Structure formats: structure tokens, C-alpha cells
Amino acid sequence: MDDVILKAENIHYSYDSDKKALKGVSLDIHEKERLVILGANGSGKSTFFLNINGVLKPERGAVYYKDRLIDKSGIKELRKNVGIVFQDADNQIIASSVRAEVSFGPMNLGLSREEVKKRVDDALNYMNIHHLIDRPPHYLSGGEKKRVSIADIIAMDSKIIIFDEPTASLDPKNVVIFEEALDKMSGDGKTLVISTHDIEFAYRFADRIVVFCDGNIIADGSPIDVLDNEKVLKTANLKKPILLDVFETLVEKSIVTKDIVPPRNIEEFRDMFVSQAKSLS
Amino acid sequence: MAHQHGGYYSIDLYAFHSKLKSVNPEFKLISALVSLILTITLNNIYVSIYVFFTMLFVSVVLGGMDVKEYLSMFIAPFSFIVLACIGIALGLSFHESGEFSIRLGSIYIYTSQFQIIVTMKLVIKVFACVSIMQSLILSTMPYEIINALRNMHLPKLLVELMNLIYRFIFILIESYMNMQNSAISRLGYRNFKTSMMSFGNIASNILIVSLKKANAYYTAMEARCFDGDLNFLQDEKRLYIRNILSAVLFVLLMFFIWIVSLKLKFPFAI
Image (cartoon, each protein chain N blue to C red):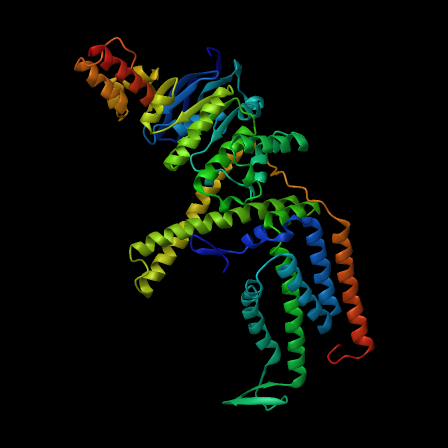
């Protein structure tokens, strides 16, 4: 848990000369953690992802994968181990059948045909979409496309999987399917980095939350520490999760005792509330 | 009716549902090309008629397609054929000529029996050729055809372009439909003038969208270790002896009909 798998050090990046997208971002990503990245549109999250995947080259700063500095020769290794699921699946799916699409990454890794075939089958089974294997992508629904784009990365067997606003265009049912897939990947020892605007999701899912604001990291810590910090919330234009808000109101009104750890999801809250109510009566 | 996909029709769904989908695509492509070349070179209406009906049999009975839908596929090429035939069958002259003619002012539009026969033979031949290509495209997914071309050592550049173009058609159509819908909802097609304006704006926007999308794609491809070669895994479909035998039989029958029609001096055979 404590091993740093990917280290970004003082990364600067700008798309044009007058506006800097990243102004010296340093971040350690630990193995097998569930890291959620919050921040407004244009705060530099996507740019940061492209920098740590090696698609964009930082103007200043360095990226280390497992203590190895990434230079020109290491970029392929970096891209292999850091997979990005892009926000818009339609901008990621390039092939004309699901089989060809999922095989694109493994084929680029130069694996044998049998190995590629096996990986494609495994990745599609992993996402429960093996029945779509012959389907052209333009006959898939939005949720199915998203799952195909995740299978793309699973087939590459990346150690770190980055999701760029994954739930932005999904309906509630597909969000549930997606969160189940995340839990499964997390259980299989993948390191997950997710950027989102869904603060409730961040609060219940993350091991650790990082907040981007205007090309800088302004907060980094456990969900409760970060989302309880009024200053951070105000600067980044974030809202406190409802559950945390309710909990704090209850503490304020002395309905629950102060020393309890705030609940992270609705089940925890229910248990806490019922036990507190019992002890009061 | 073809598959309606957010307002546009797509022919490749037929291939997706065809019963001949599982047949080896290289085989389908090669046999289609051979029959196409033979139909053109033999240049015989009996061969053409035979080819047309065999292709109808292939698509409808073997492929499991609706006859009406199959025949409706010919509407688009038919309009082109009609236009082309006018040029061949009719001639213009300042003097009265040909066997039949109509006078329009000082110009005569004329034709002759010979010209009409030539045109009819051509129409039948064109229909036969179109039906061969239809049968191919109605039973084979375009990406399989592209991959078959790759296996036949067509230059990689062309094959990769075909792959990306095919995928981009759908992406751009979708962008176009979205923009068009939003223009319609803002009364952008209220009258002729606004229609022209909206169409022009959408067309210029499509160019920008396509550039942006191409950029986004390239980023996504690079993120997955793309290094210049577009490689995909393709399903391998077995080639059965019975496939080859039926194709050989089909070609032999073409020759048989050709020889018989010449020997027995069928009308219009030459």
C-alpha cells in the first residue's frame, strides 16, 4: 500500500505561451490505492493525466515509474503501465469492431496472436460484454461503449488505470455497473486514479483525494480531511458531500457523539445512526 | 427498411445480420472479384442474367435477407444507370438521322434499334455487376473486407486509411446529425435562405469538428502505445471445401452459358 508506483515531480505544462495548464504539480501515486482527483473544468486534471501517461511531455519536471525516471526510452513502458480511459468513449474507440478495438493496445505491445486473443476474451469477460465481440462500435449504447473503452485498458494489463470523468455521460444504472467494475479492479490490485465532479462518489469511494485548482494541487489527503476543509472547498468551488454535512449537523446538535468517525456511505450512516439513537434512548 | 440510426440509414447492419457472415471474407472478396471480371469480359446478356439471379439467390436465400429490401438496394444505382443510358441511347444532331427521331427546334434527338439494344445489354450487365458487389457488401462487414485487402497485400497506407475513414464516417454523421437537430430546434431550416445558411455553417463546423476529433483520436491512440502501425486482431473464419466447390461450379456455369448461347446463336448473344 505504501509503495510509490508513480511519482510526478514539479510538472509544468502549457498548451500556449500565455496560459499555463500545470504550474509545478508534484504527486505520489501509491500502489493499489483508490485516488480521486477533484477540480473544476480547466483546472489541469486531463493535462496532468496525459503527462503521466507520456502522451504530453512536461516542459519542466519529471515522471518516475517505480523509481525509474521516464525518458524517451521509457515512454513505451510508461504507456503500457499507465492506461487512460478517456472521458468520451467515442474519442477513444478507433476500430470498427469490438474485437479489433480491444486488441489494439495488446497488438501495439507486440504480443503473440494467441496472447492477444486471450487478453481480448479475458478483458471482455471481465467487463461482461463478451457477447458484443463482433459488434461495430456505432451500434453500441453509451454504457456499452464505456465498458468497451475500459476493456481496452484492461486488455493492456496496465498497473495504473486512469479514468477521466468516467461517470459524466452514464445513466444511474450504468454508474452502478461502473462502480462494481471499479471495486473488482481495485480488488485485483490495480491502482485506480479517477477524476470526477461527483463529490458524493469521491467521498464514498476514495482512499485519498487530491484537489486541482488552476494548475496546482491545493489539497491532498483522506476524503474526510479534504472535504471537511472549508478553505479548500471554497477555493476549488466544491460542495461538501451531503452525508458529511448531515453528520456534522448531527454532531453540532449533539445527536451523535463527536468522537465517531464520519460515515462514508449510506449503510455506514444507517448503522451509526441506529446505534446512536439506541444509546440515547 | 434499412436500419435507422439516429436519423440516417446504414447498410452495414445487413451484413451484421447476414447468415453468410461466417464465411471466410477473403474467399468472398476473391470470388466476387473473379465473377465481376468475368461478367464484364464475357459481355453476354445470358451470363449477366444468370449472375443477377444467382446473386439474388445468394443474398436472399443463403443470406436470409428480405427480397423487397434486397431489390430496394438497387434504387440508388438504378438512378445512375438511367442517367448514363440516356447518353448512350440518345444522340443529338442538326440533321435528321437515326431510325427514330424527335425534332426540338433546330435540333434532332435521335436513336436507333442498334443503340437501344446496346443500351439494354449494358443495363443488364451493369445490374449483374452491381448485384455482385451488393452480395459482397450485404454479407461482409466493411472492416472484414478491409482486412481481407490487407491480407492480399494492398499497401498498408491504403488499408489504414480505409479503416479510419470507415470509422470516421459514423462519427462525422453523428456530429452532423446533432448539429442539424440543434439547428432545426432553433428554426434554422425555416425557409430556403436560413436552410442554406444553416447548412453552410454546419458544413464548415464539421471540418473543425473533424480536425478536433482527429486530434483527440491521435492522443487516445498514443496513450495505448500506438507507434505508427494500425494493427487489429481479426477473427479467423475457416474456409470450407464446399464454399470453394460452389464458387467453382458458379464460374463453370458462367462459361457453360456463354458457350451454349454462342453455339446455339441465341438472340443478342453477341
